[in-house]
Length: 231
Image (tube, rainbow, N blue to C red; front, side, top):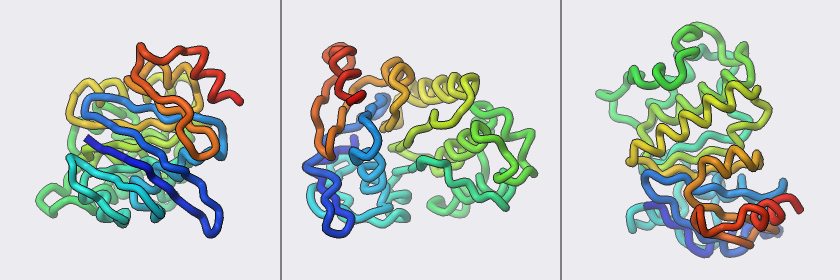
């Protein structure tokens, strides 16, 4: 289990996160939602070691991760799919996938076949440059690259942003399949409300860098949550 307790984060003198707490359990999707600019991406960057946090704790299976680097986070089993995908545009799909090897021992430097079961289009485009893919194809590549690192925690930042509806449906099916395998905790930052609502096992609504509502599916009122993230 990943546990975040009383996390604070600053950019310069501006405090972005004000004591955020959440948990992410294997076999569950924890959805973090809210309007633009409330700190959702900053939260994921802190967990992923992409930006230092100023206070609070992040623990994985009870072990503190401290102010970890992105590489240390990857080694600990945390994979991050950033908003905007960040594929390498001049590298091929194969080469982009192979960047997922960075945190693995050399003996595991192989793309597992199940990656292409999840995203069949990538097998057809292995020699195509990442920058030549559509937005939806790049999103599939970004998720696949993260999965190659064999994560225990998968962080997804706005995976439906700018994606055509049929690819959104496929990504939703992949997330559900990964959740149902039961060995991976998934934190989903998402503003597409219906997509998030259908997938998540628990919800964390963020307003102005603080949690305004949190609870498990079945305990959260849909209209209350929708109102909080639409302000």
